[in-house]
Every structure is written in C-alpha cells, then in structure tokens.
Length: 134
Image 1 (cartoon, rainbow, N blue to C red):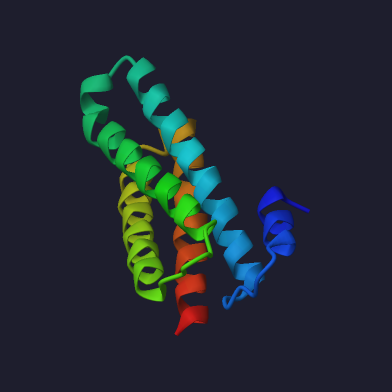
Image 2: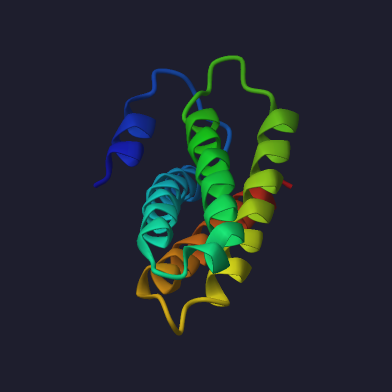
C-alpha cells in the first residue's frame, strides 16, 4: 500500500471522491514530476542540447504542474471541487504536451521515452479522476 493510499485511509473526515482514483492520481502526479525533472536534467547532458530546449522547458513546466496537482489532491479540508477540476485539467494538458514533446525524442533518448510513458500515465489518471468527479 502506498503512502498516498495510507494517508487517505487515515483521514479523519469523509472524502467525497473515489479514493482509489484519487490515490492513483496523486501517485501518478508524484511519479511524473520526478520523471520530468530527471528527463530535463538528462536532456541538459545530451550533446545536442540545443535541439532539446523545448523538451527541457516542457519537462520543467510539467513537473511543476504535476507537483502542485499532487499537493492540491492531498488536501481535503475546505475542499473546493472547482479548484480541483481546474488543477486536474491543467495537469492533464501539461502531461499531454510534455508526452507529445518527449515522444518526438524517444527513439534517440531513452529518458524521453520513459518520461513520455510517465506523462501518459498521469494524463490518464487525471482524466479518470475528473470523470469520477462528474
């Protein structure tokens, strides 16, 4: 059992969202933020770094959005569904954009392939949680 799931289970009040999808989304956000940060750093170590500027920028933007989304999803006191929906939509879009960018480099750079995979997983988790909130 992950820490996200354990923390949700220990929350003293009712959480009015599908907790399985919520835990999966928190975990995907944390994983994606880490993958994007590592991918950006790996891009900076590539010989042809000038060709990866957009990838680095997209990685870092996605990492920031994912990190923030994971934190917002981890807070439940004074919950506002409108804020949660907006953050999830932004995260899904950041992950789509980053996944698309990294896929362009995936055949040459394994770190981009891995990052694209993490982005797709997070994008799906955000969309799954959004659908459960509808």
